[in-house]
Length: 104
Image 1: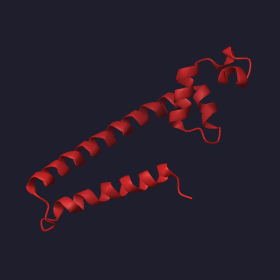
Image 2 (image 1 turned 60 degrees about the vertical axis):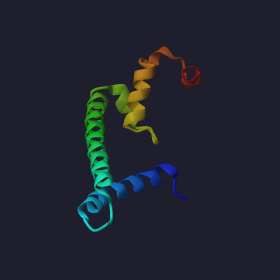
Image 3 (image 1 turned 60 degrees about the horizontal axis):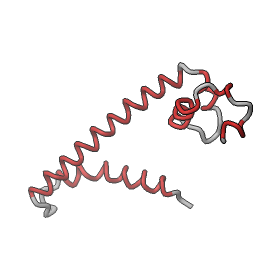
Image 4 (image 1 turned 180 degrees about the horizontal axis):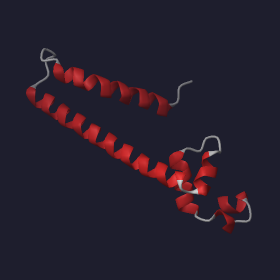
């Protein structure tokens, strides 16, 4: 069974590939106004993709320079975002006696 996140990722990937083709096709019946709006939205999507990429690079730097994040990344199911968010929220893990105390 396909997850909802996976489905959305595939849809967004499809949209990223198709929008330039739609904009290039002068015979597809799109109005000039809609073509302009779609072009602006596509540019905004590209801008946001670049911002996300820069933020991921910063998180990778943080994780690479932090032993706690490195350990968290070894846990199956914990990725870059989860590891850095957990570290930011929890801080020094040694302040907790055990996992149950931390979870509470």
